[in-house]
Amino acid sequence: MSKSKSEAVSETGNAKRGKLKRMDNVLIVVEDLEAVKAFFLELGLTLEGETTVEGPQVGKLIGLENVRATLAMLRTPDGQGIELDKFHTPEPVRHGPVNAPMNTMGIRRVMFAVEDIDAVVAHMRAHGAELIGEMNYENAYRLAYIRGPEGITVGLAEQLA
Image 1 (spheres, rainbow, N blue to C red):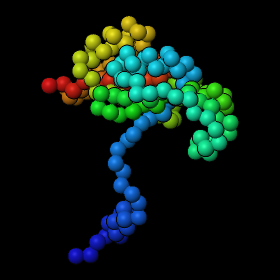
Image 2: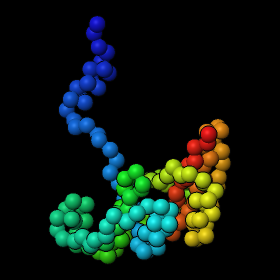
Image 3: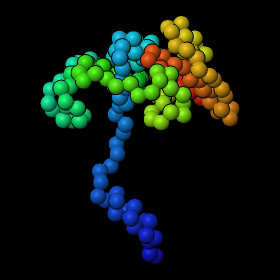
Image 4: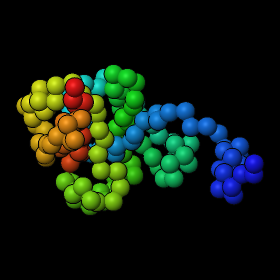
């Protein structure tokens, strides 16, 4: 049996590229590293490490000159990463409002699976997070969106029994 053109292209394309293994981390550029780091630590991530990077190799990698940045690597309980970067040089560029609406182009939120969404929301609100909204989705999930420092939006999802 002959293969369709799209099947042949797909197989050829897969043969020419490596295989995706996992998502390693998501980068969030921040102004107040300590406040954002504290927010994610309160949410339940752990600090894996913090360092300052600079120099021509870093600049070449990310396409900027005279780079000096402090970064903090945080991990979820299952090992997924969030990297927070505070650029000292060059100055960070803000694109759009701090509390950009959800239909703003670009990455708008990160979402975490949680147990006891009410307790997580209450805990995060006690630490300064703003509740944006919450809902039940098809009797399968409870969802809530919260906003933390610098307008960072976090989605929380609790699977229902």
